[in-house]
Length: 189
Image 1 (cartoon, one colour):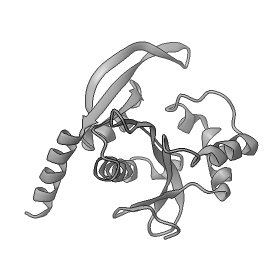
Image 2 (cartoon, helix red, strand yellow; image 1 turned 90 degrees about the vertical axis):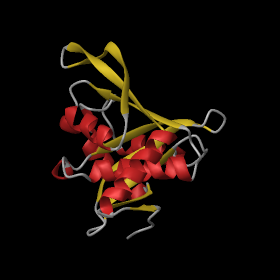
Image 3 (cartoon, helix red, strand yellow; image 1 turned 135 degrees about the horizontal axis):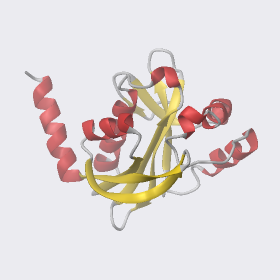
Image 4 (cartoon, one colour; image 1 turned 30 degrees about the vertical axis):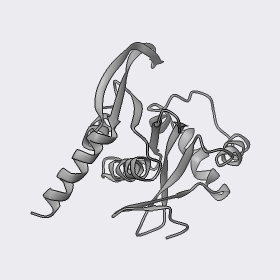
């Protein structure tokens, strides 16, 4: 493992490095990946380098690369954004850029690692996210991690020539605690 920050069973999370730029540029210019993100402009190395340079300049955002444990292969990233230490909340963002790693549970595991970190280390009370109505795979992963649908931004996103709904989901620390205890009890049976 290279510079691990949070370690799971199949993946670990580590800080983003400059040598990750080529992967991110490739992924973010791939429509299959970008379709599920709010980004619409093309990406190049200069733009990604600027993003990486700004990542760790404050404590409002924590972004980590998602890496496969066995191969040390970067497959995407995950982060907590807009962290409020007063109101104790943040917004989660994630994407798996390596399409060969879709629907294999890596994203769900990364989300669970970040929830544990957010609630146990940052002492957050609430973590939210948004997901597009056509991204059923992501919504299923979020629900597995304990997120609850809280509302809908109707026709909030313009994608592929039509307006789409955006779902607003959240999880409270108390809900995460219940899910964690439930998961631990299942593992002990």
